[in-house]
Image (cartoon, rainbow, N blue to C red; front, side, top):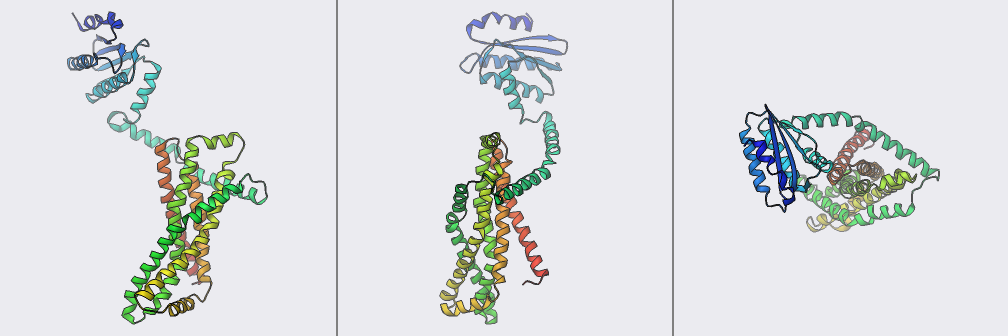
Length: 389
């Protein structure tokens, strides 16, 4: 009895709820047809797997395997696993595999299971990734420009009184960006002033000029550290929050629903968040400056035994020009705008799955901090060139 006759002898057992595998060999090709009962509860699955392994072992000279499944087969995930393992096994042995007629649901599941495999030796996956990168490359430039242009249009509509922005959303975002961020800003700013005072005192003590610790801390906080530390805190806290909120809306197709109803997502979602962060960041920066100076005051009075009045007078003499304060506030305005736009952009253009959402949140923080550092360097270079220091 040949293999085809042996397998066909089981075709009359479909009523017994067993999986059936029939095959027929033609020269260097084998046609395999699966039918019957393919479910996890079936006890005959180990026997079919052994028959499959025996068939592959005996067909070492076969070049092409054709595998198909009848529409009448009763199956669940066990058939999907068998199909995928069989295809992977054959491809690992350098055999050509052609999937013939299979039920529609099984075909879709096989495509999903095969999407991460990347084809033979991973070469197809690399080609697909390159094609995807080449296709999406223009969007890396077009999408940000379109988004920024839409934000400008929405802002002009807001000025002209034609915006759909809700003030309730603005105040809620302002609370989230401002009052809710006070504890972490207080802690970081106080420790920053404390650290700078400790480090500065070690060096200034060599010149018997420890009193200038007040100058060091106050100028560093109002010029640089206050705005920079607040920006980094808000990028990790609020920028990531914006990206997560809008990304989740995009995942649930809520943003598409707004467009369907003729509501601009930029005016309705992006504008209140960006404006709130734009206005709250300078206020937090001024607060961080004061808290940082208090951190330096703590070191000056407790460790260096300066009087509070003496330390504050030295701080006041260091801040004779209000431009020292204005420069930090000016930078903080730009920092807040960057964080708001980057966070909202990453959320608006995140993918439609949870993995893409996580990547967008991470990317929002990284990109925002990168732009903050670049912008800070540009500000400092400009101020130095204009001799504003």
